[in-house]
Image (cartoon, rainbow, N blue to C red; front, side, top):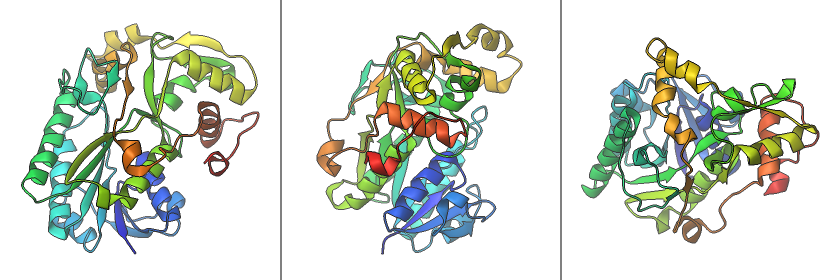
Amino acid sequence: MTTIAILGANGRLGRAVGKAFVEAGYDVRAITRSGKLPADLAGAEAVAADALDRNALIRATQGVDIVFHGLNPIYSDWSSVLPMARNVVAACEANGAVLLFPGNVYNYGSPIPEFITEDAPIRPTTEKGRIRVELEDMLRTEAEAGRLRTIQLRAGDFFGGTGTGSWFDMVMASKVQKGVYTAAGPTDIVHEWAYLPDLAATFVALADNLDRLGTYETLHFPGHAVTDMDMKAAMEKAVGRKLSMAAMPWWVLRVGAPFVPMWKALVSMSYLRFEPHRLVSGRLEKLIGSIPHTPLDRSVAEALTDLGIPVASVASHAEAA
């Protein structure tokens, strides 16, 4: 049986990916600082390790075939991103494990390409973008040197799954029970979203097809490229009533950015809310077959249900598959 270690198993992404691998029959090792097993990951093995402790991480991943990097720092402080990544690389190399890595769109900077292909030029214009490029350059260098095998899957903003912390739940759906949908930018701008159960299932499909993949792969996950009007309509259908439209007060964040670290971090990436973009893949479907994709109406209804927001009706993800 293939063994996969989920780093950051307490996080929203780690829980979703870990659950998908458990359900797919993999031997899953859930690695967290506390060593406690998340409720979503029943059937996994709980292991304690701090990702900033290289030796502990190497010990915790001993004997695994695959490592999933689901570690996420606080959004307003990315000082730990590269140190953690270096330790993950060291653990993979020490144990001969394949690295599954979730990428994002920060690498492309502003103006961001409207259609982001897998060979789109990398032009970071923010600190977070430059950090991500440095991280990916390290992974590619290690792969080219024959020390590490990395499969990267680049995705848009998350929604769905248990937990909070995404634009979907912190902004769009934050006032839906009061009858309000909140748009984070112009309502007609296409934005790339990744429904977490679909993204997690795609990582499983990649693991199932490692024999078809190279030493270093960067693939794009085409999730839901939709506007706020599309998302609002899906939310209205889910809750069974019309919602009024509100706008995120960016001017307040810009004024307060020098004094509030989180607002500063959000403002630095705000171009993603004002520039249309979608991820395009020319290779993913050829490698794994049909790409997991839950229809927008159903995925939004399920995402609201995950947040504890009552919906008019919701079909299960299993029924959608």
